[in-house]
Image (cartoon, rainbow, N blue to C red; front, side, top):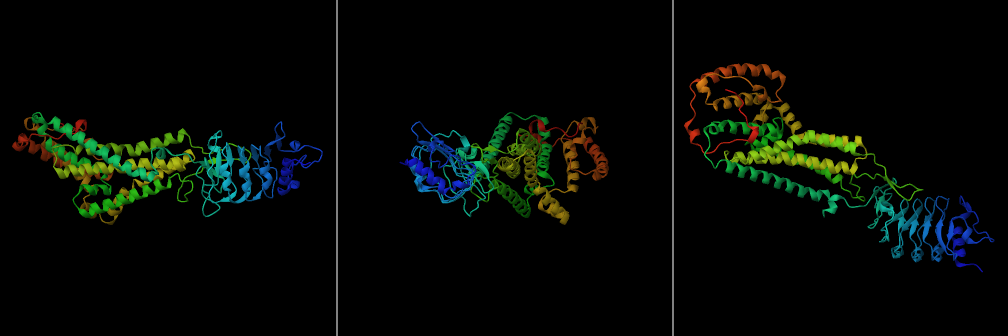
Length: 522
């Protein structure tokens, strides 16, 4: 009499070339029970419940008679050299909970009968040559977390199309690199991708700018409900001129974005084109950061390793809090000033003392500065989260993306090298105009101080902050000479100064909170 399970194991031994195994103690011994064969475990009723022959030199094929082991709960044939397809009879093992067929040379499509097994706790199918779609398998209990259900559903694949697996908890690629298939924070928020979320991001930034504008407008209206004082009226023209120069400075006097503040349509078109290129390049990084484990276009890094002799996979990335802290410092130092300046420009657009065209340009300039800067920060975060695997990589990636934000300045330099008159024609500000802006700011402030007519004296203190940081050292001597001539003219003008009657009749003034100060003390 030959028990069915002994016969099934003997057929398994024969088709898996048992004579070549690394360890085959007691197998096919006529005088020993099959429960004593190496790698076989039975229950008290002599039913085979566990067959573990991992890393044992098995080759050949998997026997169809494996289905005779009706009580089998665990089958581990990992890290061998078995070939051929998985027999559909494996779907008869209704009590199977643990199946490891990884690191073999199995081929073909997985049998649909595998989906009938409803008690799986662990299923490892990776590092084989399966094709097509993995049958839908619902795990009874994910006791192994991300390592519960693994297949070769990642890229790059040894085939043109990777294996499709909708229920896998982890996907591996042809380089034996793996990554969990869990949803990203964006997907948990009901967005399918970062690209889709980007449009919501843009709308949110525009909404933020509109909210700042309406708040500034309402506060300014409320502020001017009472009768304005004479001192505020006298500063009106000075503040308007200062605000205009402020917007040019904050948009970048050496940036093509300063063309937006001019009236030349060619300058506008060029600035819009540079803006479009800048956003397009950033979008390339956003698309590259998509966590689509089956998309070859994604730059997403598979950072997990699943070792042959271990059931649990582990994350091999070396990125820690130190790298993110350095990243935060870089982003803050480079991008936060632009966000603050952009917000200030939007606040200026809510001042009622300016005409519609001025306010529209202030708002557009501030919105542009906030949008480009905020989207650069968003892109850096999602891209580094997708591909950075070490502290040095996150810094390198951040620097590369920050370089994109200098594209407008590099194009400005290009126009300057071609012909500096082009910059003036487009509406930007050259170095010579920066110097003129210095003297103009001082002259406007001086005419706004009526007390000088009474004292006839002027103190030239506090002029240092008026000199733009970007003015080169080579211009200092030229500025000093012009300032000497300028102060002589100021003294002569202030002797007979009288406040303009029209200014006294105005009912509104223009101030900008604590940021507005008199450039000249009289």
